[in-house]
Length: 437
Image: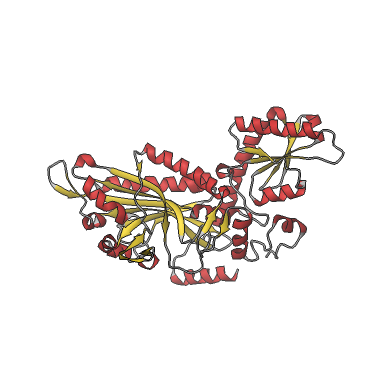
């Protein structure tokens, strides 16, 4: 078990506690010191800083492009919901009732009817599905929206994992047949798997929830589940739900089928949230800070000049740093140079390690003389001398290896914790063993 980080290296990095020593405190520190969030003056709400938003945008761009290939269109519905519509969806909203935030005043005046802030958008969307769907030619209807939602009543908020406001995408679709709906559920679930495994390097398990755990009011729920070794727990990463025809009956979403008969649509809903970022941090982060997989890092390589007071080649080294960044950027590698002269080389190293940048590229007088750079990996801290003539090829290869290694290490840790349970006694024994480890 690691003790609190009191050595010189970790104190420079800005963490006061080790990941294995106190996981909760470590996580709270690393998301702030790694510049993903800033605390806000309303409990359970957080400022998402550009370092975090850039990760979300990369996942968003991938997912948005993929669903557009499936002819799913983006839309936007209002943040506010009427109490009447919420009551219509009573069975479904029982799962959200305690979390709904209400607007009750406008200035000094009480509103005649309170207005809810959306915890999810079925209530906002489905009256319009009923209006827009008339015949079989109106199907399938497939919408997605990128937005924020608010879920208020809970204790012990955790940034990204459990917050009162968060960003997500929510897809809502309607089909003429259950077969079409079933197919989409699995297609979307596969996209969620790809986000976690191909981008975040977090292994997940795809599966179907029990009747007790399924989406309230739906027919069945499928999810991707991630495992956090340091917490010894699985966490739901995203869900893809077949709603069946329950909501369609509530909101009278009917259509005339090809036989001229009145029929009820089959519906799906599916969503992933900024929880993705929190799970990535929990799985990969270490006692030096964040560990960002290259595919979701807005900055994949940081170029740092190595100078001494006696260097007469300062301008040449700075020029070499700028040239290196230009070469990498032109090859599609996200790189910048840290040329600040008011911070030491050691401070810069710790700063970028804390922020999880995958590759540090150093250029000093010897590198300049040998027409090379020195690269240091964030995952293994291995040092590699790279000739400028091979710069792009070698850096691309290193980034690929880092991405692959992060996934493989996380998968090995997860798989080592999996046990096959056949009886209730084995189940309780396994839980007890896990708590005692």
